[in-house]
Image (tube, rainbow, N blue to C red; front, side, top):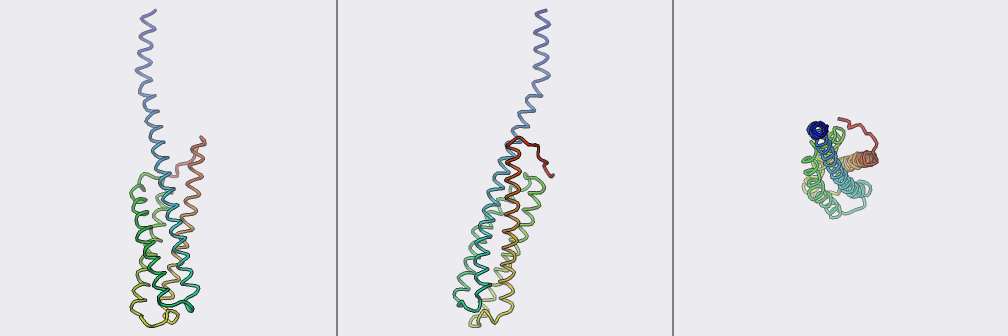
Length: 187
């Protein structure tokens, strides 16, 4: 009887050991996934803040083109350029590094935001080149420049809207998971 009890215990450990180890691995994977999601949410929040700042500067240029000096135009364009190069670029570099570890909806959102950011950067570069080439011509008389400023503003607003929605959705999803709710992975 004692032998049977010991044998049963050993058998149970042998059979259940891998199962409980699998649960621990699954829990670790979930914790890692949550940590990755948190990093993604934080980076998307940074993108949103930067896009709002870019949108502010682009809106000033768009709204007050006839009344502000060429120097002020250059100042705002350089500020937008700095926000893109020193803010958006590093944030998107990190987002694309962790992108494969995120859910499918998250990956799609990052791709959409990246497209807006790339278009924003290209239009900013074109606007700066246009202003340098136009030199003495007032910005209000340069239709191409005005159109570029409008598209910079549109791209920045699209980036704000997408990052805001993605951040809200991701935060709600993470909160639901942490509360123990079953949430679809959207993979």
